[in-house]
Amino acid sequence: MTTAAATEVRRPSAVRVLTWLLAATAAATVAVDALNWWYADERGFGLAVRSGWALLRTLGFLILIRHVRRGRAGARPLGLILAVTTVFAVGRLIVPRAGVPALPGVLGFAVLAVLCVAVVWLLYRSPSLREYLVRHPSRLVVDRRGISWREVTPRRPPVTGWLLTARVAAFTYGPLTLVPCLVAVGTILDGRLLAVPTLVLWFGIGIGVSYAVLFCTFFLLRGKTWASGLLVLVSVAVVAVDLAFCWLLLGVDGLVRDGVPLVVAAGLTLYALRRASRAARDGVPAGSPVGAARPG
Image (cartoon, rainbow, N blue to C red):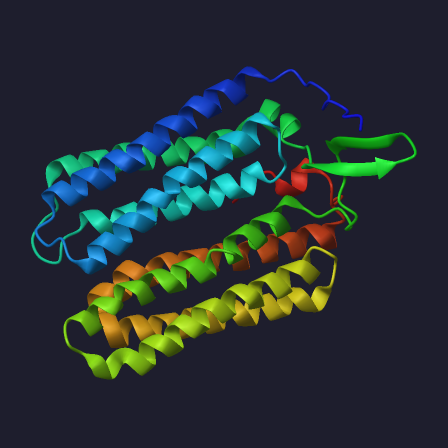
């Protein structure tokens, strides 16, 4: 078997800057989470679940670093969603149920927010990154020349960056629904056994949402116009159901802490679908970086 090495592309200096910026953001996420845990008045089950979810962002930033260094086209929407959800995931941790948050946690969160803004700005405003982040994942290819591992253009029609953004944002629905569901397990531990059927239903809906989003985005990236409308319906439905369960099992505190991140993700999905639809009407080429460039 012969292996074809991937074509080496000289990385612009912006790639190195973004790599270090992402590493600093990952470290800041861990530091702020640790500070919040140290200063928290109540270290209950709910805080542990939310802290664990925030720490998973560190793994997300490491994956994003790999995508950036390899010049993957999906790095930009992934970076946007990761930065936005990180701000909300960590921000809800520093606010206590009563009183004011600890100063070290507030300062750490401010630094993290600035880093996230810098990541998004660099991803979407740097011309050199825009030209570099265009590659597709490498795959095992069997053809007349033998077997090789090289970059392969997807068989689906080219899509705008806004459709990729909508896809990545929609994929967060499942986790953002399951996290408050796991937090609500604490209500059972506190003796509210009557909440078990509701909790099981909530968990099932969270799993079902993941499959519904997978179905919608599969056809969305293949140019099916009906898939966009279906994804809008899924977005509205999951927000309505999740907010209702958050209020029922977690109260107003859970509604704010766990409902707002999902609302933001759904809003970003709908906005990305709208921008993609507008780009299609204006005749922007699907593969053009202009269609993926600037949020706003």
